[in-house]
Length: 502
Image (tube, rainbow, N blue to C red; front, top):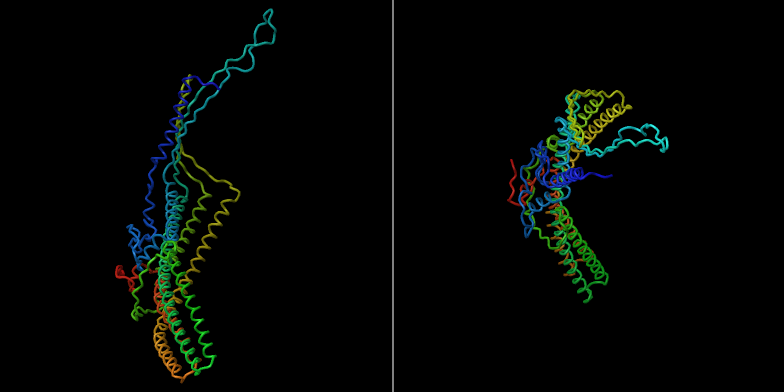
């Protein structure tokens, strides 16, 4: 199709205008980033909870990795860089954007369209009738006149929803409760990640202490083997004594090698909890261990009631129930009429033809007469969804009570076990020393000595586990209640940098 020069210039100008507009839109957004301020309801960083939670922000300042990581450093690193916290935080930001979508229904919509059309019109149809002329064949007419027209039609349309029986309000409430649930879920994720970091930290030093205990047991077994070999060489003991001592020493070496592997695995587990790659160059500062605090004991039933008001996952479940209930109202409004304000303005410019313009303003009523029972099943689905969320909340309520009950009595058991292992270790150490002295003096037998060494090795291991299990149990109880934060680390005596908020 051929375009005259003047028309081609208009087409090229329109094309370049569209290209320039597209480029400008990529560099400078035509709309504000968050006009409704929905992101203000979300935590500014992945390591901080939104709302009325701990106001501290461990991700606020970028700092270089320390030479030796304290427990507080480990916790802050995990909160800021663990993928779980970032995923939960981004989900909350996603729900904030969905809230903005719901709130946008309270504003009118404007649409502008400007199609550029090239058309060909025929003035008449078929062939025109003519008078026969001598020498000219009859039946031949004169072709109709044709014209090519370039037209630009600009249309501006308005649509403003005035009333829909509460459908918009229900959708906004659903989005608000869903955002609230996402914020609570983010807070629950923070506590989960924080507990994982604390647990991995203490497990690292528990495994290292277990390695030291295994090395001490290996040295004791080696000393027993030397004593048995010495007595066998002088004929004071049978070959069976030497072989039994040699077997015990080999088992002690296996236990030490296993403990060394567990210590390396524990270091990798801690690095993973911190959002880092495992590395032997990772230096972790040991904790400042403290003994059990009797003043921390409270009634377990009171702790269960406290947890029901503090657990973020339970609050998230309650928000999901309210969001589902609002979804029922939104589904019901979908089967009711809507009232909207509509309008449009059209301006059409055709080259070589008279220009046209028109406008219209009015009110539009839309009544869904029949939707194939789609609205009926949408309402039923919304009601069932609300019932599912309520059942999930009730299940979680029972789970919270069990979590607190289990964590409370596990902590009590760890406290009593820690005290008992102190006596056990002292008794086993004395028993091993007596058995070794008796065997060297020829008054005891190898079975008595090996049993004493096995008892000492077991006492060392139980002492190590009890000491760190008590610290882990304190963090687990705080998580079960729903108040685990960085302040709990300072309460455990790990670092004086963070003080517990009263």
